[in-house]
Each structure stands twice: as structure tokens, then as C-alpha cells.
Length: 161
Length: 163
Image (cartoon, rainbow over all chains, first blue to last red; front, top):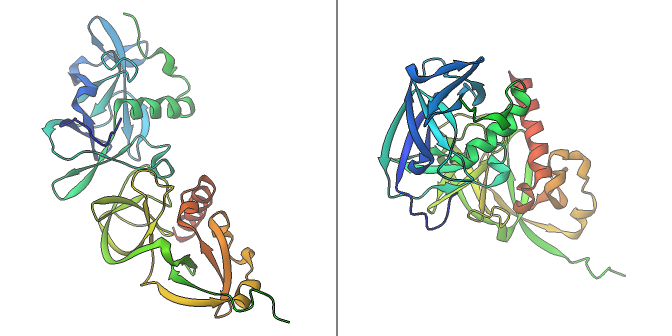
């Protein structure tokens, strides 16, 4: 969540669906390569600490899709917002960079981003980049997948190996 | 005998939001007019409010009635809107600088809200100016679900018509 006195200074910058998305560094637990993505019963997933987690991504327009997206070669394992330490799902991305910033993220109002995977903006160089969090991303996937991909039951994100 | 309000006068800012949509704001809700300012787009946000502008250190959502690109330069008015709980401001794209006009009691009576259905959810009053019904809208109501939903539909319809 974005707070007025945020102490977050480390972020990951992910290139997804042709855009750059910033997340707090603490929201990403592991970075998997393309070769680590498995197909278990037609569900693309990665293995982490002996358990399987599904991989989702965004195609153009931030439409959610299962698996690594065209041109993507990484999957960032995102933590569950409830625990903050337990993994929830992996997000397909083309590139990922870690950086530190002095600027705090600026939250945008619900009437603007209420049904968006984006939570606000973060100043980078001279412009503003999209900022999100594990909480916002997972909430968006939960909502969107219910309509877009009913065959993928989001409740079963963690598949016991 | 004159009614108690027969000499009633007030000032409003008259703005052209483009697409033949003239609207007005009560004087104290308008903060500043920004000419030729850069707006930045935000993917997946509400179609009618998918850009932001930086103003006085704030990141301000911009309402637009037409499709636009990222990093485009446009004219906007910055409005005081407590309903944006993040920083208390919103902006609206306009074609040119707003004009201060004085309206009198008689101008209110002839206003027809049906001529301006897009603004119905944000309306606090209205008047007739140069033969046109001009809605007086409140910035807080522009942030309401009702207005954003109507504006999104208008925007999508407009996009389809111009495609």
C-alpha cells in the first residue's frame, strides 16, 4: 500500500505488455528464468520451495493471460498480500531491473484506477511511471480471471506438487 | 412586485471542454488554467480520465472528452475537488482559457438540463448563455461513479464514431 511516509526506497522495474511497471522490492520473492516455467496439467507454473505457483502475464492492453507472454523470458514470483512473505503467483515479464528511488509513489483515486492493475505513479527521471503492488495485482487478476479465463480457478493458485 | 431574488447575480467560469461541450464552474472551484502542458497517459485507467498532469508537486487526474496520446500537450483547468482524497485536485481539458461571466436570475430559469445529458451527474445548476444551456458542474461530482460511468460511455461511443 502507498503511504504518505513510505519508507520504500527499493523497487523492481518490470517490462510487461510494452510498459514499465514498478513494484516495491519486498513484493517480489524470486525471479525465475524461461527454462523454469513448467506445464503441469496445462497450467504454466514455476516451482519454488517445493511448491508450484501459476504464471500469469499481460498481453497488450493489460489483458490477463496464463503463462509467459510472447517475447517474455522472466517470471517474477509475487508474494501474497495477506502474509507478505508467502508466494502467490508469478508475473511474466520481458525484463526486470532493481533500483532505488528517493521519490515516494503517488496513489491515484479509485474513480481513475479502481478497476486497474495500476495503483499510482512513481517519478523516474523526468516522467512518471506506473506503480503497483502485489495487493493491487492479485486483486486485479482475481477479478479479471473470473471473466476472462474461467477455466483457471484463481482460488487454486498454489498447486501442491 | 419583484421577487426577493430578482437582482441575484453571480460569477462563474465558462470553459469549452471541446466536442461542443461548454460548461461552467463556480468561481472558487477553479485553481489555475494551464496552457500547452504535457499530460501523461496511464494504461487501463478510466477511458474518460486516463491521463495525469503534474501541477504544484501534485499528480492530478485529467478528464478528457476525446482520445489522446501519451506525452501530449494540451490545455487544462485545475479544479479543487475534495472528492479526490489523494490530493484534492482534478483537471479538465479545455480548448482555451476559461472566461469569467456574470449571470443573472433570469438566465437560470431558461436552463434545460436535457440539452446537456453528459453532465447530468455532475450538475449543481445551469443557465442560458448565447442561446445555449450551460451546465454549472461541481468538480467533486465529476469524481462520482455516476459521472465517470456516463463520461466513459460517451468517450467510448465517441471513439467508435471517430474510428
